Image 1: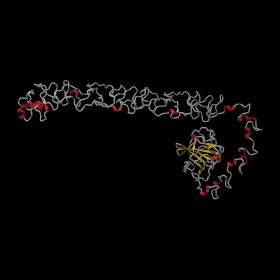
Image 2: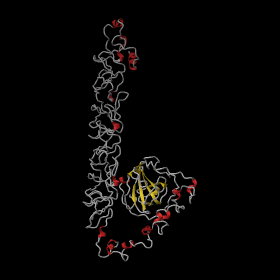
Image 3: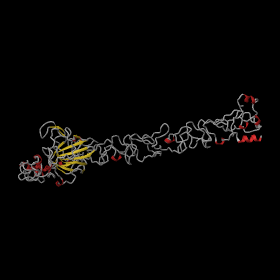
Image 4: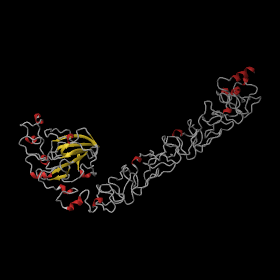
Length: 622
């Protein structure tokens, strides 16, 4: 906000000729605004008063307001201050009155902007027009600080050359403690005691006292005609601007009064008020020509018929009110209208270049509130990831491993990977139902924890990959895992309802591949015949007439018989000395003694191991 209702710029920010010394090279750290002493001064923005008092480096009565984010404004040469250190200030609040205290040559406001410790040109900021809305503070609530209070009071201005004041300026004198009283003792420096009110004897009259009525003694008599009320004898210039006019005024002035005198042209209807439509037939002031959908210049009225409502599209051809510019985040102020041609529809992308309502700005992958549009270029397709940086439509809130609502997109980054999984925090696409031990629908993801290698079992509660359909006792498809619970047991079997692992071929009377299961019905005791169609355990490879490995079953058809078939291996009972052979065992080769003489046992003789109980029974009965 502007610090004054009427901004009359005089000395600008930057290098200038000193108005006090007349020398070149002084750097002016603020912007001067001319105004009569006593004019109301407003806070440019909301904040907290960080310092208020007498400024020892020429600022006179000075007020500093901290607006946060490293931004501070200062108000200098004030007549009186209406706020104290620590006060919370609203934007546009009356905080002081214009004066000419300190190093000043006349009534004006020296306005400074300090950003992150560095003085900046106040004209870099757009100062919005202001008018009085607060109830005026009484003078009794405003104070003027004594110039003897020379402590810095926490001023933001550091005392170093080139930063905030001219290096040619002398440091403020250190006042003795007894010089802070009133009236000022006679041994105190005279420049300070001349700024008291009342002044000490012998001081020149203060310029402010020459503008009172009656004036103080010693003031030029011409000033009395500029006071209110005027002193006797002054020309009644003010009375000629009233209606009715005072006697003796020229009649032409009556058309410039309010109300106008009868018969004057209705020029007042074309009065330009900032951001208010002008009357029909009135022309905009010079410099206030505005293009459609662009903000009008500061202080300019709106063209006739351009009345605006917040969040409603402006009439075609009308400019936006001052300050209604689309921000970098795509929003506009809540009280601003929507530019012409910008239609806002819920859950639909806004037109490129159009603003999003302030309450509808969301973070990526969060849902927009109901009734809000999507940012431009954020068009969604069901079961497809959203564009990076785009929010989700309203009602599309997701939970990990839960199906998304039909018609909703997937969050950014939730793409099915080459191995068929999605990140753990992603939802399941719509239409993808995951059931334990059931194949997933083609194109649907598998939960990340359910990815298994071939011939291993899937974890409990996990689905099977697509195309992996199983049948009990049938070899699984290559690359497919086994269903949950189908693990080869310690006895080499698997549950009856399980498929056979890939690569495990089961052939009757043939040893199974190492690591492959034996069908449950084919599990037999040693020296008993395996059922027809069953495989032999791994490592049980047989040759006709050769001793059978310990603990292996007999092949089908090779049970104990009166005459052992020639294709059968020798059972454990037949691996004894010839005189101990059961009658149904085949006779050993012809020269057993030759085998003994050579030092090697006969091929049919069993090594010294523990015989089975069946063998002990057969031997004792013979």
